[in-house]
Image (cartoon, rainbow, N blue to C red; front, side, top):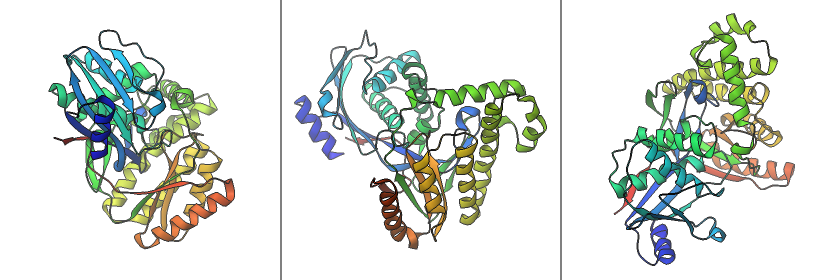
Length: 379
């Protein structure tokens, strides 16, 4: 945080007015259910994006990314802000979304961003960037935004202007996280409850295979689910219980759509069951459900890949690992592993050596904690 303030002064020749932070997230279970009207169970993590910013008296927005220094300062005019096809389109889209929701930003701003979330790893770097932008603008311009509204703004920005048909889970977790807790979120109603994540270690493994959701089959999966829901005569797939789905699945006359629907319905139930298991401190059952989730993501939703499958299977077979699965949109990215505290260090050593021997890539491994959501840090 202090580094962001010092870097801001170096780049913009004056100190920032404020510094803010928005965390990334890891989803423990409930994948690709949020846009299907189902439940997810993410937690905000202690990696994210910092923003140092100050207002301008004119109507210009200047953006700088410490992580992409070769891009330099990118400038937009507030009265005419077409997207430019670069990373700064994300904060610009938040500005456009705020305007669409009736929030008046009187003036411009200089904004510097830096963070430790790997891009394309499935830890929601884009959502954290959107949320930290909204929080910084909220603080500078005294906008009446709650945490939930901040999440909605971020999702709208990505759906409407970036063109990724994401659900609200990523932005919600970043904006609404709570220390030592994950969030069981009903993405259909936005009702939520916190649940303690227990003493098990959360280990994220980035296999080094990047994805780009905007250019991937993510939107195609959403269309397939919408088509399946239409054939079943329901608004959203996750409005169905597994029993109800089994009784009506014959109405889906497309095998691909049937597999997508099967995943959404059963994954939604797994998320609900997994939180119940965690509340009972039944980590073995929680892990079993995580393992089933990965199988479904691999076979029914088809968003895994060779590297993620290898990581998940190796972890599931390792003593002391309760459960392991791919997490995030898929097509690369990370696995999330729930590990007994005494096994964490040995597991990390094992999986690093195993993956490097198998693929010639040294994986990035993060032991993370559940933290609070986006917030102002300074002053």
